[in-house]
Image (cartoon, rainbow, N blue to C red; front, side, top):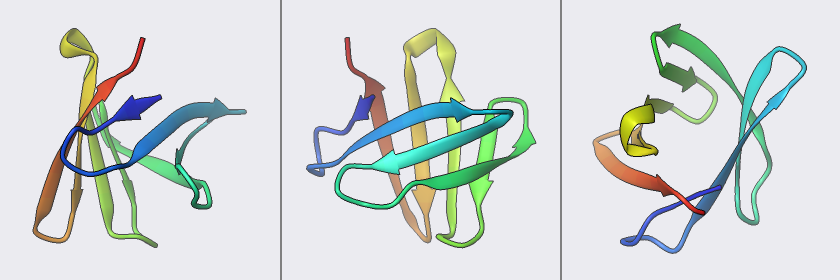
Length: 73
């Protein structure tokens, strides 16, 4: 589970079979498509997620907005 301090939203990232799936709290889950090393997208929602494993975080980009999410312990 990852959370953001600016917006009240947590996102669970999980693996289902061979796919990476994101599920924001209170919303439907969606499948992420790999587009590079540590980078994924979902065209249906216009979302791009790029993981930074060293910092245990990812950056979510949607339209012109960009948000950092930090992995919860």
